[in-house]
Amino acid sequence: MKTRFIISAIAICGLLVPASSTALTETADSVIGKSVVAVGGIKNLRSVNDMVVKGSLKSGGLIGSFIAYSKVPNKYRVDVDFGSVKYSEGFDGRIAWQSNRGKIAQLAGAEAEFVKKEAYDSNDLLLRYKARGITTELLGTRKVGSRSAHVVGWKYPDGSVKKIFVDSQSFLVLGEERFRPSKTGKKTLELSVYSDFRPINGLISPFKVTVINQFGKSELFIREIQNNTSIPLSTFQKPAK
Image 1: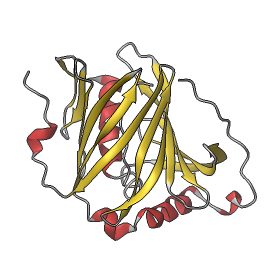
Image 2: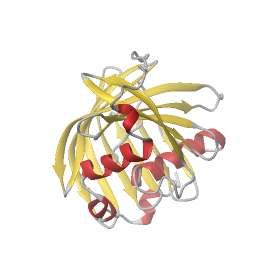
Image 3: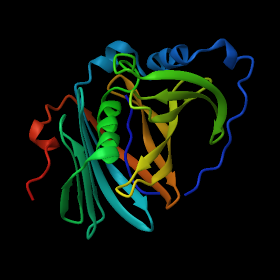
């Protein structure tokens, strides 16, 4: 199960290298299939109907906390609290929204589509991508930290793309690289790196996420993961005020 969170963060280093002879024996589908097995298997992945993730974070010299919620198939919300600064975003299955410093807005265009993809991917990155019209391609290998990773190109039906990095040995997902859009139309390249993998509820999950973009680096430290807690649908709705 993928765990991923959105925090602003410096430019990325690391280039794609040509696929090795070993990598050439793999395809994007075979790499994803092995990742499904590595993370806990189809049965365990499909047993998760919702998830609550809690932890702390460091970003831009600030220290705060976060709570992320997801519910199959496409409900998503993350709340970030730095005390005087609070930020939330979510998707209720129909509407994408954002709350920043008390200002609540319904998102539109590329921003809304980005959050919608986050909602689907947060619930199911590995199992139903073909049914969603996503096409994949094995692009080669690269280093993610000290680990060698397969690079899986991930193309959505609307043409937007990202890269998923899958450990060449363990086949756990080590990270993702994508462009995050803004209201001005500008896109920011963002890298998320997953580490500190631990078994929880029959699945292997990262307990640390490092997010890097042109603004800096943010680190998220997961304290608790709860599955199947019957999260009410109201949790994902745009706040009234």
